[in-house]
Length: 216
Image (cartoon, rainbow, N blue to C red; front, side, top):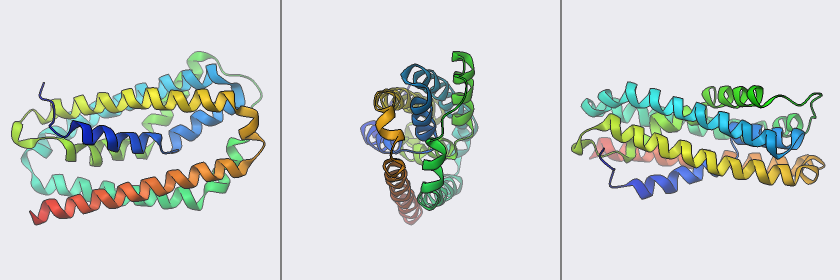
């Protein structure tokens, strides 16, 4: 399998989006606040599996198209960048609503299987993950070296692994500090605001890369 030459740039960019408190991270933190570290980690595992599934689907579906078409390559970047900006603005606009919902406690602790299934569906329905795999990830491949699908699969697996490690860290921290977080919704609002700003910044960078690609 061909390893892209910009793989370390990809890792750095991936860490930015993974560390940003988006829908999946906020759901994991919410689980940790409600049920503690064990439930949070099962949620993380399900979320990582869902992320990997999305990575494979995007790689298999987009790989051959991106290999052949410059227009398709730039279009995916434009659309993904614009949607990331939208998600960032939406996260900031609704940060208070999200924080309030995260502070609510549930009634019965879900089983490990139920928790994993919930985490999986949150990942599959998380537009940030889909957009990242479809728009941000392709700009780090080496189309001239071929095997685009294989490169996308490799980068997608790395992204899922980073999600597992970083989201797991969020879950452990939130589970440990569950009382401190749950008593002040303002702290959750700040987390959501930071996540929104990161998504907007990344979206602008993706659009800029698409413009440079077409100009070149």
